[in-house]
Length: 149
Image (cartoon, rainbow, N blue to C red; front, side, top):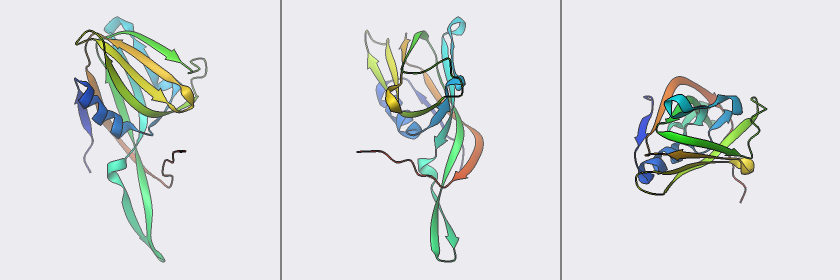
């Protein structure tokens, strides 16, 4: 399977990236706002929803799943705000649930990254310009993300 590479310049594009990143996990220390270059970047372990495989075992097929290391960055970031995220705990783990774009005065707006447990990042952007790229490292995991109703 080839590495995923996606870009977003509008809310519909960002919905696609959000779907691919649902249940990605990251550490607080893997989030970085770089105001001098107006960029926000993060590295995540993305659950590879599109890459589920079946491995034959004695008693039948056993489902295995994969995660892949991926990078996500946003350009044109004017300000970044965190709520419910302990930035003083760089090893804290965050589970990404969704990303959405709230347009203000086109093309500017707010990118909202929502994490389980109530954490949220809000990125004020001059214009939406997001890029997601798999970084090549893939590994199997027996764990399928689960959501409470």
